[in-house]
Length: 168
Image 1 (cartoon, rainbow, N blue to C red):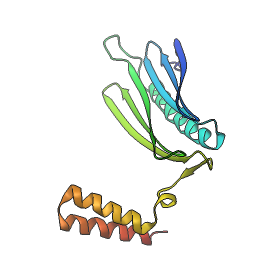
Image 2: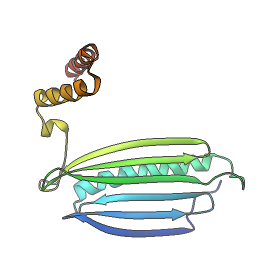
Image 3: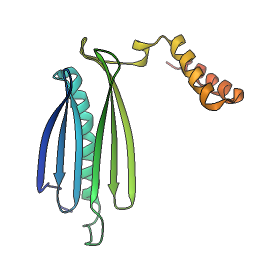
């Protein structure tokens, strides 16, 4: 298969929140379709790492297409789909959930990458920036207990987290 070139490319942008917009890129050819939504914040320190991840995933998709045989007429097109969900936590904190799906021949790959950002301080946040270990552990235990209602499972999960805390 020759290098994948889109026969049709469309780009549009939509304002979502103050300082956040979604850029949509649609590409089509005889062998594939690609639909990508990219969150943009007007801040390079946030936008560049997210965009680089998206580019790497799309490049991987195209490299996979190059390694397979030319598609027969009866075979379905390959698809690359990356959707972005944006959740507002407060005035400056947002979570971006990027869900990637690849369909190539009979194979389906799904990946999820999550970013929590602070627009005011122009940076990515980790869970430990939001919760102390104790608060996080308490909230996690409460969620696990609500979902499992099984004391033995909760104890096993607590032990696993204690083991993780000792790893540097």
